[in-house]
Image 1 (tube, rainbow, N blue to C red):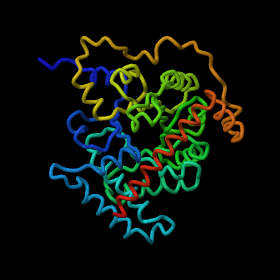
Image 2 (image 1 turned 180 degrees about the horizontal axis):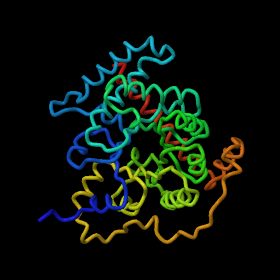
Image 3 (image 1 turned 45 degrees about the vertical axis):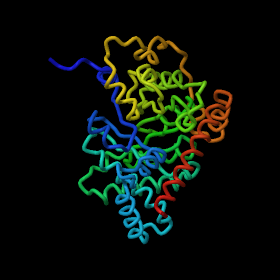
Image 4 (image 1 turned 135 degrees about the vertical axis):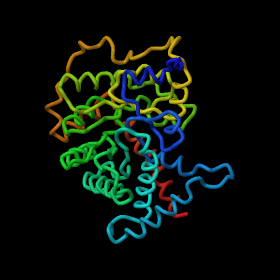
Length: 333
């Protein structure tokens, strides 16, 4: 007789479930997963972990990444060794998790390039090259590059997708961003259900969670026949996760995955899939007049939700830049 069905089992019957972590233990225990998502914050907090003896858990990985970056200095003369070492550390962490995945490894570009199309493109190509260099047997088609959903970032996504590199438009908060992401051909978008601040300020609660946006984006993509898939992120409870059952993909942090696996599906009195139910007749908006017009798109984005989306992405980029600084600091120490 099999074990009772858990909420994680139920979620997997509705959506492709991804892990939002660089901690390999969760994947071992609860995998395999489809994709593994990450960012500078996840990388930083994984790399500063200590082992049972109180020593850095990943000291050898960090040292190896710095050695690799130093050796590659001539290949990337315009990139600081610390920055290249950060990219290498993230790829090394991702490669440890590959055996527990069916799909993509997601690595985020340097958030300091959020408003620079060309540097974002170069950064993405460098990340793919590092994957190939560190593990020649790894299929580079399984790398997905996460890029903040600014105008410049989404134009970079267009060029990368045209060159065969999969992209995910991250830090997304409104339909103006989602429409542009589909137009440029992103493989995924990541609607942030909670603004990023909630994960770093325990007293802060997002009063405008993006459930409605997430549901509208998925219905919009299905109506226009877009290949882009919705992958909600930034979740704080299993109740939030289960409301999103039915998303194309969903990425979940280890502590929530554990709770889902430990919670029996029967009885479950919370909502399941409510975000995607009952709104099929909502009015379709036509974004064709702004997706090729930078000025019009920027203005529409600025005015969306009375500016809340723009405020949230600025906040997220700032937090990720702080974590990028922290990662570069690790390499220098």
